[in-house]
Image (cartoon, rainbow, N blue to C red):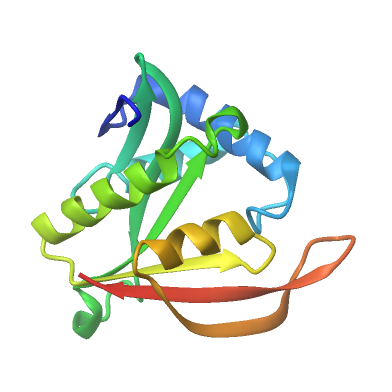
Length: 166
């Protein structure tokens, strides 16, 4: 069992979150973002994710950030969707394959349920096999596929929509 913890992100964490996400963008195939971000570009995103249930949570081992997760409103402003959120999560390359993804999804589901969310959606590139497998093992169901919707520059790929009722 991993000795991981999670906590709400602070402003001091933003540089590490940007560095981590930019590394994921550079790897390719895990995000539909193709260009790295500056701190200034990510500040509005950070500001928008400071209140429950849409807070950013950092995941740490030995007080070192290894990843993060957060929720975003699904169809924001549409009253009938107030109990639905999209989950996003990212792990540093060296932190993958150690059970942190499972830890993130377990903790995220607890937080989601405690804040009144009833459904979680995950939207991922079909090339992200690890994430798809993790979601399936965590009880997420494939709801649909948007074929070849993502233009990754050197290739096109589909996007998957998965969901779980909490």
